[in-house]
Length: 339
Image (cartoon, rainbow, N blue to C red; front, top):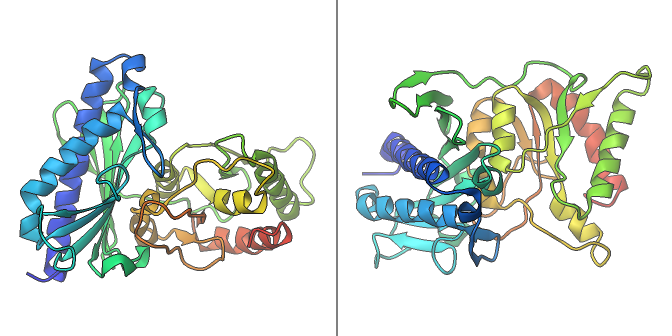
């Protein structure tokens, strides 16, 4: 069976894995207190791995071992799974012969979830296996599954096959029923009056990131009257969560410039956690819904399918907002030596 005929089965499989991760995480949230959930199991090259991550990974590995053969073999590229972040299923098979390469983040937003603050997301992207040269632009199937907090009884499941648009449904976690919905990015033509922000989750580099955001708003709306709140911000500490907010019309513009800021301020601030390619494994869903997703060079979002490369990215809800914000934002990146 060739890769094209496996697109829908691959989507269904990745959705089933994501839903299983959601169920395991929810059970842990209800079973253990916050001190137990926040135990650090080990440090990975790209992040810290907590107890809740390990339980999710055990489910993923089991499901891959049971199903990879029917897809002609899968090379899994994932945070925390395997010593090198790359594992082949079925076990012992050749990575060169595997038909698929799957980039996966088991739980994007672990910190918010394990403190039961906010949903995290299972993120996955599958591409025909082109070896280590496989890139984000090669992804043909993307899936994101909301991993809800213990106080929620629903989980949103979104997916896309390249060229086929996006699909979504809301799963009731109490009875497993599903209600379809259409992901709808904002149709507003300006960020004025909406949620729009530059990501600045951690102390390092925050002053420069905030300054660029202030300059951006001042340049876009120089004649705004005093007292008007021009934009609002929501620092969702998960790239998947940020993509979800764009997909569902809640945010209009998001920029994550952390890698460029840490490079520019090298020696004066301590570099910390950045976005990585696996955090963007579901980017295809955004593109199929009409989001404009770019790198910090203004070109369509792309990068290697790995777990270590620092990734900067920008998301615009639609073409009108891209036209409004993009040129000014890119000019500011150049002025500050970030592009």
